[in-house]
Amino acid sequence: MTRTDMIQKLQQFAPIITLVTVTDDMGFEFSAVVPDGVIYSEPGMLLEYSSGQWPPSEWEDDTDQELTLLRQEFLLDETWQVIPWADLEDKEIAQWLEDVQNI
Image (tube, rainbow, N blue to C red; front, side, top):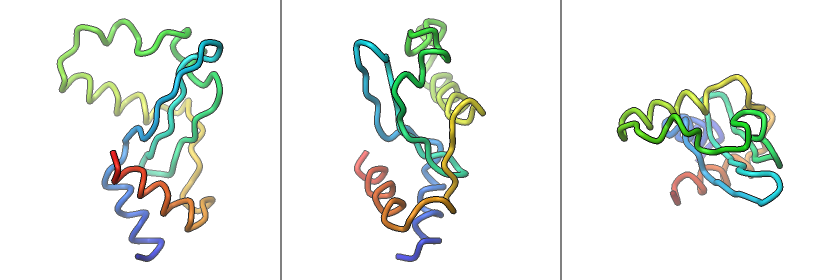
């Protein structure tokens, strides 16, 4: 599979969270694929965004469809540092594709 093919497949899944982790001191972190590239998890990345609470309490009473839209808006927020496809090596793109396909 070519680089272009892998990127196109990933863009079809985007936006999608591929990994969520939590620690006692830094809260939640996530990795994700978005149309323009990928978001790598970083320690404390949600502390400022959500005041440490994740998911935000206002998401509690939403329907599944509303939650899907909220997650999409969240992932496409300009807050996140997106690593563009051009900055990723083929090996990294292949790993992201494998991760997405294993979800």
